Image (cartoon, rainbow, N blue to C red; front, side):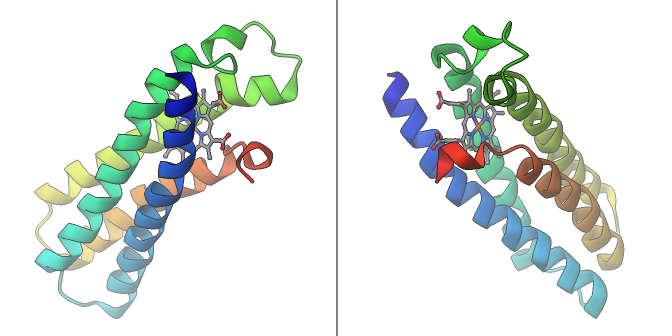
Length: 140
Ligand code: HEM
């Protein structure tokens, strides 16, 4: 169970990050080129949302079965364990909350410019936060 979840979380991270990067780039391109927000842009944004939500779900389960997750929460002096048991989960939950807020907010907006801007800000911040707390040395 642990190994399967760990491999899935490790592999899905590529999918989630690629989908999110595409959504952020698309939002910035749309914002700067002042183009119209179409159904295609909506699809790109929802793929970014689904990709990260799936990773959140796997991450939450993994957190309670991994020896590097909740089980290590007391060992804050160990940098690597502090990252996997506290910083990585907490910052990622905040990042995915921001992405979700961006998605929810865009639905209430009318103009294309404001929709692209909202995605640029909320998805962009989410991406920066996620990248800041990935356990890179474990991944590669
Ligand atoms: C988009 C969000 C996330 C991304 C891109 C991501 C990515 C990763 C990556 C690349 C690793 C290293 C995997 C490896 O060893 O090959 C990892 C490990 C881990 N992640 Fe995430 N993660 C995300 C969200 C979360 C969340 C929300 C939680 C918990 C609530 C979580 C819990 C963990 C744990 C416990 C590990 C260590 C697993 C182990 O090796 O035992 N992750 N994550």
